[in-house]
Length: 302
Length: 314
Image (cartoon, rainbow over all chains, first blue to last red; front, side, top):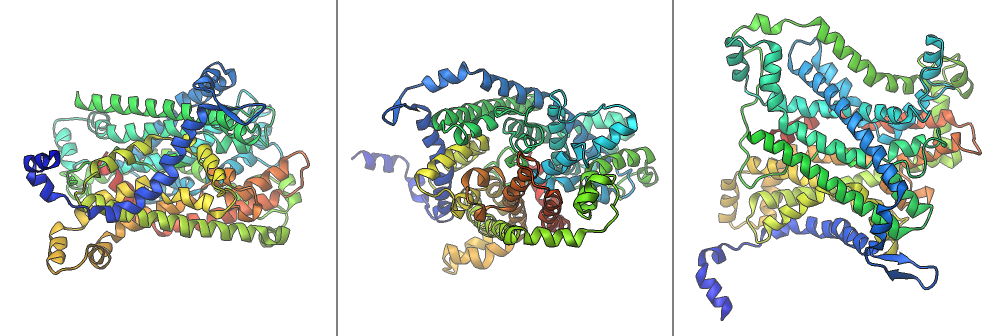
């Protein structure tokens, strides 16, 4: 009876029900549930258990989370990637922005060449980028040895504990600067020319146009680039994990949260605890990405 | 790295109206002379950017031509005594019964099946989202958008743990299955299909009695092609460069892709029981990036339009 009432109440919506779309969306969603949703659910379940010395794993509630929040290794790694992100992301995005504005100014000789040349590192796999820079940093047949000889003293020591974070930041900047540049450049191309013309008639100089029109037009892209750079920083793994071979005493097994989760699983067999690290990092990242997006769009409204 | 594939804020339900694209700055300008003036200073600044971007690649090319001895005895950015490139390539390809060739083949397989499958699924789903109003559509949108916010960190280890329960680790499926999902690809096809496939054309085909799938394969697919190529290209890059996932999933070197294999060689060259195979690591790295760089250079038109399609929405 209830169902009849519903049908009579909203006859139009019923008539429009059209399931054909599922024929197209269905396959994606099935795989999506299998390889994305299921692992997350499974991981959350794992975090509630712990491997006991005797008799398999037992339910421990939120105890793994409590342990994690008292784990100085975890905090140290989290602090490290936060420091990394606070320094590296602004530098990279400002460089990308300068390059994009230069491309957009149409005052360049051969801008097509610049665009493709600066973007090229993005096509290089992160592993290969880390390998190349690792060699370049090296004293044996890299460039820092030659550079230090040129200066006269050992200024650059990329693998020392003071320099290592900067060394990794340089690799990441090298990889993604051109990519972000293209994102900004594509957004700039969409701004209608009339805006610049009107501004010029009003007597605005180039810098006024940049700060008054171009930067505001880029706000959406900047928010997105920031979010993805934050996610990238929190996930940092490839570069430190490869440089670890070259600087084994400086890069610990818990250098970044991701390396910590990896080493807990594969060197320590602590799967439940490793899943806890992964889930907590996922939540932290999602929350920060959400806050950045919220702030970004709020300023847009103002 | 998944940070590489940009996913803009998410499509809205309304059709995307694009602002007029600035085709030619000079043409529409009131003062063309002033516009065209080139700036030497800016060009020099950009040249510095280019040098920074290119030097590591130059270093790689130059050092791939050196023998093991020359690597240690010659300046990093200039050639050594002997030109050893072909000897190095030969050694790379034949080292340990040609394991490098096998890794290359594995990478190709992961790319063809993984990136190809990801493109197919994303195309079908993006088209379905753009052109059909079905029950649960909003839920699909919300779930996919939510998944984008979950970083790979949270996923890789749990996926490994689940796959090992299912006995899938150390098989190609462990690498292929997770790379079949591309929320970015779905988003791109979705925004593209809204404009590219006119609803009137679909209505006409339905009137003629064509089934939805027939209409899709005979009419819509062709109209979607530029968007599909963009999605494919980015999926290819993502799978070609994939490192973390195969690293944790595979323990058998015969299934390694190039990235994992190379990193293992590198560890072997600089680890505790070091073997001097630096020239192989360097040449192998060069061989790994050549196909992908060539693909990027030749398909510029597509990825550049793909990136702008993404940013229009931002």
